[in-house]
Amino acid sequence: MKDFTEKTCRIALVQGSPVMFDKQKTVEKTVAAIEEAAAKGAQLIVFPESHIPCYPYGMTFGFVVGARKPEGRLDWKLYYDNSVVVPGPETQLLGQAAKKAGAYVSIGITERDAVNATLYCTNLIFGPDGSLAAKHRKLKPTGSERVIWGDGYEGSFPVVETPWGPMGSLICWENYMPLARVALYNKGISIYLAPNTNDNPEWLDTVRHIAIEGHCYVINADQYVTRDMYPKELHCQSEISALPEKVITGGSCIVDPYGHYVTEPVWNQEAIIYADLDMEQVPMSRMEFDGSGHYSRPDVLSLHAEEN
Image (cartoon, rainbow, N blue to C red):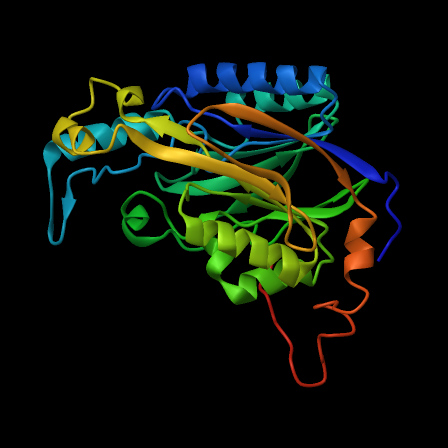
């Protein structure tokens, strides 16, 4: 494991709310959050899953087994129109904000393919020079997510070399895929980003387990969404009215390489959560268990991961 060039990472974890189905306004709000975090010295700024234009929780887009509804196509088209082409004007603005902040910025988007009409759940990492350092598409959308997002095949397990060691991401329930986690561990990951929309106790058990298993910092980035944030022009108002008042309640937190909370979960509000990560804890935590090193038994266990 290489020595870190910086021993401490000042992180800002943004438990944000999108301006739902509006990429322009959500980008503007995101840039403002980056500027606020930078003003407080953040070197790494992390946003949730599909922050731009939103995670369409509770919506079916008119899909039932064997049929579709015309009005569902209209809602899907609105989502499509507000999804992000990479690279494009939205990524340019985000890159400029990262450069101005002098910080790494991780953000979840719904990506629209530049060639075909398929959408993907994607996580982007921008470098402090404003460049797009990594793009990871969710390998397998979960459940009904499959009606709006395709299987990711581009950017399987990218990591970014940072002053605090390798950094990468798995999105939401990808983190339940043991071999996907191992693919990141095998790259020596020290900061593990987990953008998601899970606000249940079992998920918090998961992120703490990953921190212990990988002996890395885990950044659990969730969002805060309420029913009244959904646009009134959507055609599926009966679905939206059936949702609870608080749709996604947050729970964002940071976990250290021993599975302890650096910051406790934050609930029921938008917030920017700050912490200073002691990166020396990463190698020290691996003294008696290094899952991709002395504890890996490569003579009997191995993983082949396709890198696209």
